[in-house]
Amino acid sequence: QVQLVESGGGLVQPGGSLTLSCAASGSIFRLNTMAWYRQAPGKQRDLVAYMTYGGTTNYADSVKGRFTISRDNAKNTVSLQMNSLKPEDTGVYYCKATQIPTSYWGQGTQVTVSS
Image (cartoon, rainbow, N blue to C red; front, side, top):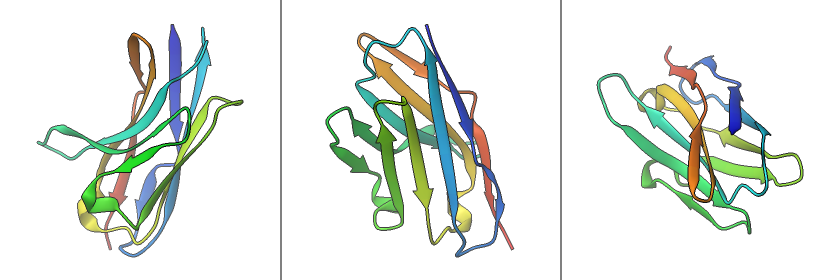
């Protein structure tokens, strides 16, 4: 089993920045892909960004140029630097890690962008 714990959420004004962090622990051999998802109220959970073990990244169109995902394979952590935040970025952000063949989720951290 792998446990994921997110941190760094909060309330921020439009145009502001936040950094989310996710730490994995437990029975880790190699986490292949680590990703961030978000779920706005009443909506489905959508992919925000992911990074493979080798460093390949992918971003949702809505966050390209504003968000940056990074990871430390030695420490089994993944971060999401979020800049130029917009009200539509509001939601619960979840960390997901895949250790083939299983995927694990964190409990989520709330991000609210509001003036």
